[in-house]
Length: 369
Image (cartoon, rainbow, N blue to C red; front, top):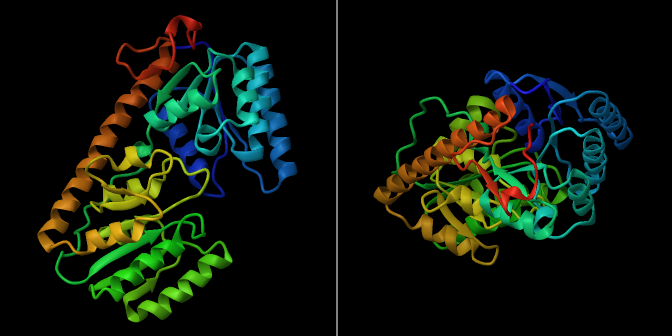
């Protein structure tokens, strides 16, 4: 066991959103594996509160010792993460930085460049996929060491829910925090196009409306699709999995700038529902060859039409392949998590290839010594 507990710094619910849920679930899984953690919650209702929480976290990093895990912020909040990384570097603490957003990975960002420089070449960067690892190396040259940890382990396998018969109308679905960047307008457009083309479809949309564009899209869906449209509002727990299990196809045409590895796609796959989603962040790795279709904004409606035209037998095959894709991702996550636990509990990098270097591994000292 490494000397001392791991200081685990990041946002925890409430409020519930992707990064906070991921941080909480990872903490629970590490603790259940016997990794001692000291949690420091960065979630706050205001910017002033957020800054204060980071100041307190910085004090904890400076005053204690042992490994330090930081769930990185995005956008302007990255400067606060840079501060924490710098304190850890000054204190000489082994450092793990977990990336949940993609905007600072896709393009070179000053805040991330500073964060990487302050963290140093020995810091381990946890990313959500192989593409994210490669893009991070291109955008931030100081990054030398990465570990891929996909998000499949954050999704509970649903209870044994009977899937809807493949007879009857083709049911399309979308669930998210409904906003324009998450693609709700494109979902309505695609479903309306399939309806106008004469296909027997229904569209089910779920999630809270977070902007005017989403509310207008919901109203348009009701007008254009009539009784073929359902808006279900926010869904949680078993209701969410029941929703996925009734769909023939899940739609996610996101162009949100921080989109990395959305949990909704994994939840749909876990329920045996294939997906059509835009090629953003790590989505192409999530869907793979069996999970559905990786699309573009320009071809999204046409790709949805292709799926709608399937026979009942093809729908069943698509469902089986979606389940297989989730199983594959879950198995990968188990191996990747074992690599992270090995690092934290023994200080040794496992020989399994779980830690993936983007340069010569001799370029820096081991993470935990």
